[in-house]
Length: 221
Image 1 (cartoon, one colour):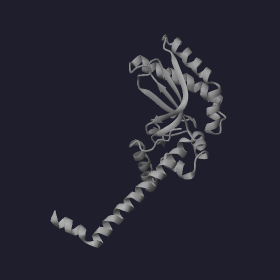
Image 2 (image 1 turned 45 degrees about the horizontal axis):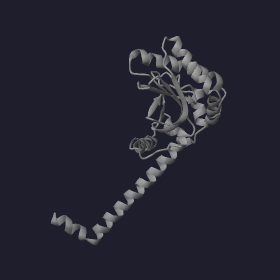
Image 3 (image 1 turned 135 degrees about the vertical axis):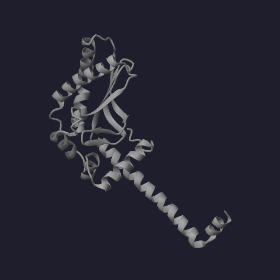
Image 4 (image 1 turned 90 degrees about the vertical axis):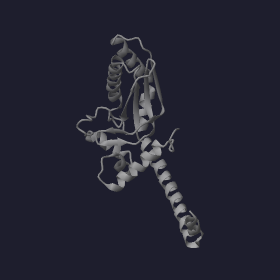
């Protein structure tokens, strides 16, 4: 222990230690700033759907998927020509009552009496894969559908660009959906969320995930 203390009394060792610490702080700040900015930029180009089931019972989970399918069918019919997230949100906002009506009708047709709460807001999402597209954890604008007590497992997808019908088993996103995403993002942002073998891109995505999962990035509005 005394040897270590004496070592740090050496001016050169002391200076190296201080410089190393300062470099670490600087690198951390730069990484955090990068993650914060890129997370917000990605979220600014995506509009998501979040459906919460009444409970974890099988019947409630199955009902969740029925409601999801009905809402997505309607969403695709009114937003098929949307070019960006803002257009999609505006259309959903204008037709919010219709979304609630469709959800309630689906629930009643399945023989349940649950109520439905529909909100458009900024909500927290975990990291999620959609075929060969991965969205980092963070806060995203979304249409949130709460069925009954909304205490069951939830389901996430992306309403714009339309990734909700991606066949996860095939690992392939429709080219038109991918093109919309690419058109609404910078080259680096799209590289981060799309499947990429570039080691630098993979490292940046891990940095983004680390700060999000640590709760250090809160891109709330």
